[in-house]
Length: 410
Image (cartoon, rainbow, N blue to C red; front, side, top):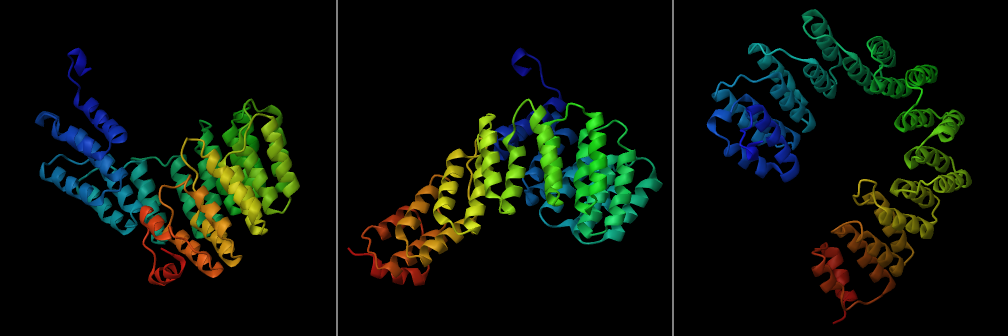
């Protein structure tokens, strides 16, 4: 707009600041804020910068900025307080949230639904379930903010985490009453949370309601339902649901197939897992990194290391659907390296490291230390090992340094 000779409103500048942070990073957003005219530095733009700091978990910067906002008497909004409370929850300081709530009350800042939800979550994080219930009662007494389905979803999730399944199901009944607009997300939460309470009958009842509300049911809904059924050990039910999805889906989503493939693999039904993978491939859904990870776990568990490494290589080469690299967990890498070390298999260890280099910029020092121990136990020499470690910027332990003296032959 400014390029067409029109000045941005302060609201538009606040939105743009957030966009700058997302696309160019916090330093660029800070520079944008500094360059704003003084008349534009109000609650909206300060609040936008505060929200950026909170999203990036920049606690010191957020605290300093909120103090500056108080000095300027900007009158903090519930949105600013909500961002601040969310920050403390995410950085493992939920005990700070109640004091912020008291500050809001002292400053007559009206809470909103999000305020109550993050407050309850903070109390749950310190195992104060009775405190959570007091917040719900306060919300009802206050009456200015109506508890919607998200409030009861939050409450039910807290109860489930605490193992209070009866209370969770009572909250889920309230959630269902408040889903008058047939929100798909509400149905999803109901299915997931009833699944976590172990109530298979209610899972199926809500699924029928979802199907009636959404006759053209999305892949994500089938994915969620099949996953819940698998978690509840109802594999026949999951298979039936999968066949229903498979017969009517317009796009064959490998993520849905992966849930059942994983269930088969965990039960040792490798033939069924392989058959489903190939069936998905025939329908145009190529195996993704998760598919190969499932088979990797199976073969690793069954100590078929050669095939496990092949699956790992395929997962790395396939990558994630969003274009990012797939990286094996340190546990998987450690298990494979330990196997090669025990089997005195230098070539196997070297081969794994070559695969890992395609997934990560820096291979962990523990991997190289395992490689050094494998070289040592076999008695293999390497003139290049020290230079190699230097190029990889790897500093090994004193014990491995001693082994290097025997391995490296100048």
